[in-house]
Amino acid sequence: MPENTTRARRDVGRYVNDALRERYFAACEAVYALGAPARSETDVETGFGTTHVYRYGPTDPAAEGRTPVVLIHGSGGCSAQWYPNTRALSAERPVYALDTPGDPGRSVHREPMWQPERAAQWMDEALDALGLDRVHLVGSSYGGWLVINQAHLRPGRLASVTALDPGGLEKVGLRFFVWIFASLFATFAPKALRPRLAAWLEQPVLAVPELRAMVRTGVRAFRIRRPAPLPLSDGQLGSIRTPFYLLMGKRSLLVHPQRQLERVPRLIPGARAEIVAATGHGPQIDHPDLVNARMLEFMEDADSLGHFANRGAVEA
Image (tube, rainbow, N blue to C red; front, side, top):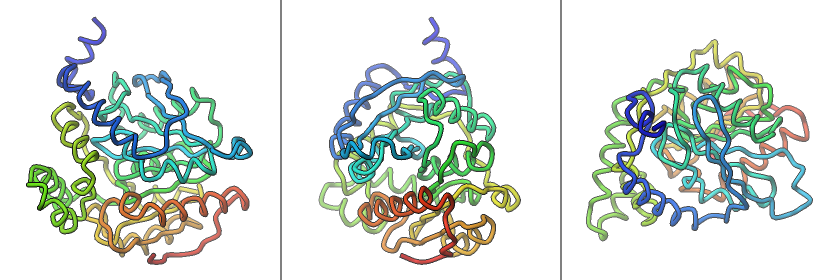
């Protein structure tokens, strides 16, 4: 009965039916297999639903006590999106990847949490349930908004924040939605055309068969029930004191990279901002070696210095 009640609600994310949910899970497993094997999986309860968590590494036992990394994926996906990053990150630190309630994945969404304070409360409750009192928080796209929002509203347990081509900096414009729909349409193109379309659209989903299958199945299987997040104001960004790292794709359609390259370090004391060339909305997928190395370097600096010295704005 509780499951039927949850399914009927119009303000929480839900699967269309059990058969499509299982097909989506199978597609996700093929993507997870491209990255590091998870050491364990667990579910933690919050006031907004059950959050499914994947635990990775570290491969070096001496690194077990290092400040862990927590990964928050983008909208319309799950933690499988981190397959290019889990191996490198978990080689040096414990890594936790959370399936966000309200998106397709193995979490169960029961209460709306798109409002900024509710989103911050969910993350605090999930991290508390995992016993994590200090973390390096990394978010991509919508997950980028979640981590920026956390740094603004509930920064107490954050050692650092890394935002990868994030929401939360600008209002989501028409050009981004056009790109999303064009990319989805392109997943139906003949196999021979997909590499060209992937390059033209800056869309790695088209170039990785397992990722393409996961995204296509997720669109059919799951219904997201939340509005696009509102951007943080200059004053809200200026309140952030957590060591902050912003990486954007040079051809991003979610943000205007040059604008944010100047704005974020000006507003957030000590923040670093970089533009990654030859990519759009997925720098951590298109250039995983570069992005993984930069993230680990940033976390190391944040741990050793207690803050991140201002290196300003650069283009990678």
